[in-house]
Image 1 (tube, rainbow, N blue to C red):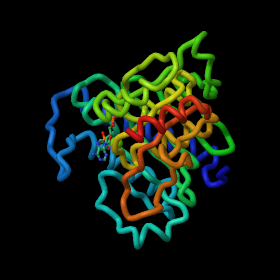
Image 2 (image 1 turned 180 degrees about the horizontal axis):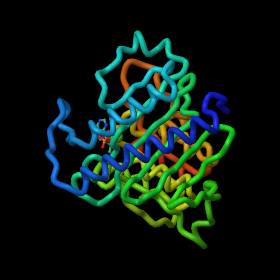
Image 3 (image 1 turned 45 degrees about the horizontal axis):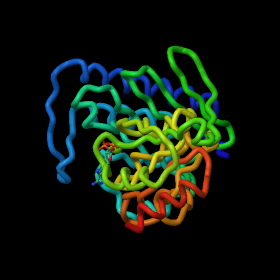
Image 4 (image 1 turned 60 degrees about the horizontal axis):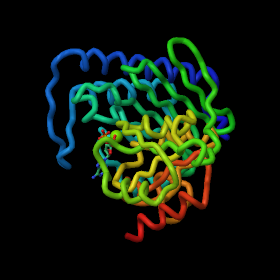
Length: 275
Ligand SMILES: Nc1ncnc2c1ncn2[C@@H]1O[C@H](COP(=O)(O)O)[C@@H](OP(=O)(O)O)[C@H]1O
Ligand SMILES: [Mg+2]
């Protein structure tokens, strides 16, 4: 439950994220340069255009709340640890999908309170779709002016209907295979970016095991959507909910996104981690 984001603020934020998405789309549709960051990951003009647009939006809408962005200079934990509320943004998640032009990239904005993502907007400009989640208020999907309430689905009986498991297009293929090998009947789907978590929020996937590195900004906004839709984003080892801003590193632990807990996937997860 968060009282900080009012109806008016939510509307302004969604409109602002859509405006940033239009800037990103304009770059997507023409030629653009690709640079390499210090960690060898790619960076485009679109990452920076989105970063500047989202930071300006947040400074206009909620100037008293600090912002941490994937594309801002790192802010030391000695400062961040005092933040009981901050914005966490990934201006362009799925940069490799953006470069490959498959449309599976997102703009991500989360509000973190006491380490918990309590509000999130995930926007996919090419798909013309936005997912919004807010603790205590539920999750919705916005497409072409239509609003649909979201709810994770109950795990089906796998002998009747296979579970749906979503994985990255690029990361952690081996551990994903090991996890799937220990599951009952299931189907797999690959997807880029935070869209994977949104699939679970929509009830279109049951599980997203991420047994490979990500950073807090990759997952926070979509975690707010999943949890508002009734699902969970859990540390793969402890099965506790992921929290942001608990340590110096912004790396997430390996995690699993689930609509519902179940001993069968928990056993499969344990088996794949013990390999
Ligand atoms: N070694 C690593 N360390 C931290 N994060 C990593 C990583 N390898 C991949 N990622 C994260 O995984 C995200 C992409 O995941 P996926 O391929 O499943 O969509 C990237 O988001 P960005 O595109 O925002 O850089 C990146 O942040
Ligand atoms: Mg990212």
